[in-house]
Image (tube, rainbow, N blue to C red; front, side):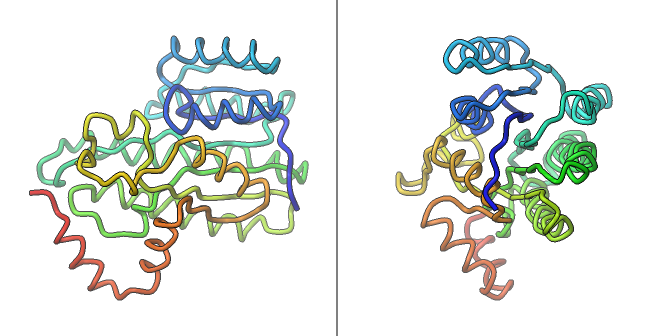
Length: 260
């Protein structure tokens, strides 16, 4: 069953894939709640989308790694008088480096944002969606979640969680009018990978995906009820191989790509 969403909340909407998702949703006529830490950038985005597409755009500045920020987003999602039909859990970040070399607080913050916030926001909106028998949750994961990634161990583990969580939750709500999808892109040209982030500056041109195409793939997948979306033929192949190749081979490949 293909779904049309009339109101969406997008986290991490101030830049990158999150911004592209917000722009595409607005172009489709969807009202928005945009969430991120940078209030100024959210206000600029909201003004642009209102003018271009005549949709309602609510700005919710919040740091989802903090209790106050998370509570603000949860409360908005649970507001039955202003129902959100699509939750886009896009906010996330990565710290490059071996675990022994990074700050413990930084590693914890990745887990708080990439995992804890995503689960809590999904938990906040799910009862209303199930009651209405209509809704969608699009969780932005990564192809890294299928792989073994020395130098990005925490990030890869959080994304493995997101994909597994999404697939399992999709099974829980199957047949109840709610779709759950994990969007698993590879390297995508956004601010996330700017300035050689995660050592990607030397990646070949064919490895890069277009952010608008990634965003559209995710929205099409959740509307259609597909539990996993892996944009790009090259990353579909990688994800498929990762599911069938013995783990010892993946570990060897991970060691070969390790950045010391």
